[in-house]
Length: 302
Length: 338
Figure (cartoon, rainbow over the protein chains, first blue to last red):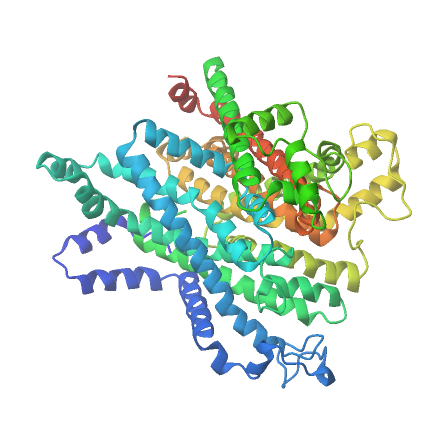
């Protein structure tokens, strides 16, 4: 959430003949001006690293594969076990770090599913319009009228608990936001002079959509996708927590918190650390989304 | 205003029909055999077939949909395998508790969020603003169920100043039901001890549930106030010597409230979703806990009932917000009735 760049000087700056590198430098400057954006980028980078390198950097990789050390069960955080151990003596730090890969994958798949469903529908609703567009928008409204988590709960209830079903359910309820976003953006672009000009010289519909409309929708979609990575991770953890998502001993943060809940208050570290990691991941994606909005979509800055 | 109202009512009916289509699709079209689910995990093949015929599940889908619509409209939402009650009776028992929780949390979120948003905008970039923004970003990112657990750990288990969960203590008898809202009933009957106990049990779940909504209300209200305070008419009012308090409270707030109201409507729905998790943490006997307990034991019809009730509530909330919108902003009214 950087301060607004004074529009006069920015416009003059951008109006100069410029290369892509120069534009990038401008974006980087706006982005770096906000400490919050940098913090978000740092957190996201950190968790991507944890997800990529997890198995090689954790102290006890065998603990994720069901190792049991009953002599070390429920130990408080120490130099040997940074986040303590659980009821079978598994190192919680190891499991939480490996959980980063699980949660990021879940978030990514849900967000991809949602964009894959939502963006084409939004473009059709906005560009083709008519009764078809109207129908798409009304259906979208209905889906938006039930909280995503409740609808996902209903779908998982029908399909049965499990991590794959939880991802499918959340993906199926996550797309309506993208339809709304892309439809309104497409409607606005459709009236722009450059689209009209393209139409006037006989450019085909598909070409207009792919060359003129879609590229201009990329910025708001990116911003929303970044925010949604966070909320999808949060929702999947929620399903894990109520026992409908990932099942223990799978290292998923929500399921870990739910399991650790039985060991409160004495063995508090069991639930505390997975939750802290969820918080930091979601915080990172939200701050990054805010920062991206500042540079990509300055008009809608809140 | 009347034309606007009529259009809104029509839209509400249409949305409700759409919602019924979704719940029907999930319960009848999705893989996972509803007769199998209704019969329970231990049923034999012939029992499943019997139930299939009894519920009309062997007929064509459009016929089934007609049956489903007639059932729902006459208040028949099926029966819970777990509680052995009709879903409608269960919902009537649990819904008031959820309503109390969500209403309390929303009142708290609006009561704190709007003033905080104003303060944050008026004292922009001071420590007040920075602090408020940290709180509001965290509120969205923190997992509510985890925050609830940590509050429980600190305030109930370690310090022991608040109860751990549930709606009332074991030693407290509920008051005679009038409205079925415990706090209101205790107040009406003058049962002060019950009221105190009910409120003590409500503190942690209400605070936990309110946090994400509080965060987004602050965010939107701050942004809108900043935008409004830059407008010419505010500058003009200031030049005419109108007091700062009057400018903020009377001139700016009214305009800033319109997008804030939309956010409140939206957040009400999210809260109904969030209540599923918060009720699970605090063992709060509402429809969220009911839905989770049903989902975990593959008891299908209660989940559909809860989905319908929550969807209907969200639609009604947005309906009220739309009306308030039309009342606050005449332009909305005219564009909708045109």
